Amino acid sequence: MFPIIKLVLTTIALAMVNNSCVGVSEENDPFEGLKEEYEIAFKYLPIDLQQDAKLLVPDLIKKYDYPIEIHTIQSKDGYILEIHRIPYGKQDLSDNRTAVYLQHGILASSADWVLPGPGKGFGYILADAGYDVWMPNVRGNRYSRKHIKLDPLKDAKEFWDFSWHEIAIDDVPTIVDYIREQTGQDKFFYIGHSQGTTLSYVMLSEKEDYNDQFKAIFSLAPIAYMGRMTSPILQVISMFSDNLEPIFNKLGMHEFLPRTDFLAKVGEKFCGDTSAFQILCINSLFAVSGFNRKQMNSTLVPVIMGHTPAGSSSKQLIHYAQGIISGKFRQWDYGSIGNLRNYGSLAPPKYKLENVKVPVYIYYSQNDWLSNTNDVDKLANELRNVQGRFLIADSRFSHVDYVYGIEAPQLVYYEILDIMEKH
Ligand SMILES: *[C@@H]1O[C@H](CO)[C@@H](O)[C@H](O)[C@H]1NC(C)=O
Ligand SMILES: *[C@@H]1O[C@H](CO)[C@@H](O)[C@H](O)[C@H]1NC(C)=O
Ligand SMILES: *[C@@H]1O[C@H](CO)[C@@H](O)[C@H](O)[C@H]1NC(C)=O
Image (cartoon, rainbow, N blue to C red; front, side, top):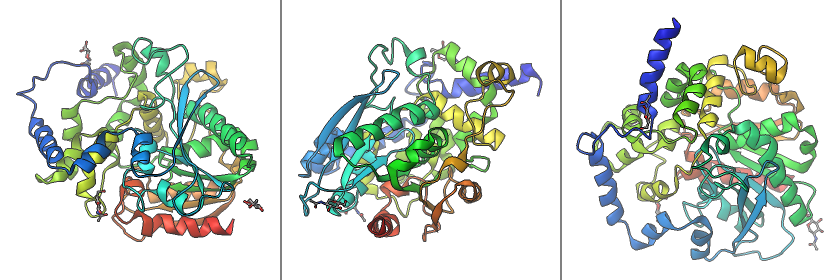
């Protein structure tokens, strides 16, 4: 493509995602109606669930009478990370419980493991099954939007200058070390969803020693290879990905905050009617990942909306978009010159998946915009020790159903508990 045409197209795309743009007046906003609909849905929500939508995760867990601890730790490069821990459940109060590290996905937070409530959220189910549940929040989300020196708004350029690579090689090992220290356990479980799986693969590829820290890793909707990803918003971003970063920088779009009307346009694909689900179209998480009506509990929708999106950097999305174009699982692409300077090679280095030697169990589905079955197969063939590859029985199961899906306990969680028992 001619550079000038590319620049024009990029500018148009940016105008669509540029959240700071003030051009659209409220009356012109075609999705104003949706927001109203959300307000109404929210107003008629039982008081109980209105609370759930607004409470921070520790207060939410307290409300349901589970023990909760807040741990604050610091990454090597100065990000302040908040971990939420449910040390035991309601049935078994023993203090000798195997730790489980639960890692949320992109635009999400520790809320994902508890939002559906006791008996349904994976965090509660694990605690009640006798595990010590650790739910960290990685840099940039609402619980970890802090740094010893940098301010997320005033120093936006530096604060948001990270992708999942930095999270994986700095935040995650720091968290793992901390859990080991606190529990005295040399080996525990890791369960990741979406970007949470990417983080485990990147960490173990780059820091092989950490293989020894885990009894097993469970990957829900794994993401490494992205060549066949079908998410419309990531497709749009990937069309422009090699031009985006410098322009994002110039415009100060370091945090990923796409405009509502743009999201709704992208979301038209799954928003054909006026049901309660329409509101999901203007939520950036669902615009990126899609959803499935059968598994989505409509009562829970306003609660989910209260907790997501929880924040991510633009670079996290762009790094995935680079993977869509290249079809490869590799480090950040600075362009040939930048790559030479940073890596000493024209192309970014690939992640060494052959270093991932810990037992891995993979859960994937046919209706996942982000985690395509062919991409997952390619990943599974390169990991050294895949002990199980499970296609979810519901063929419509979507990317977010692993955390919010009505049948997630039956289709995923209980199966994982059975396997954990054997390790
Ligand atoms: C993005 O928003 C900023 C602030 O309103 C504006 O100055 C800039 O021109 C916008 N960029 C594009 C490409 O629309
Ligand atoms: C604690 O759990 C470990 C296995 O996780 C077990 O080997 C040990 O005997 C337990 N200790 C007590 C005091 O229950
Ligand atoms: C939907 O969510 C509400 C609120 O958490 C809950 O009471 C209800 O049991 C859920 N329905 C299903 C089918 O899971």
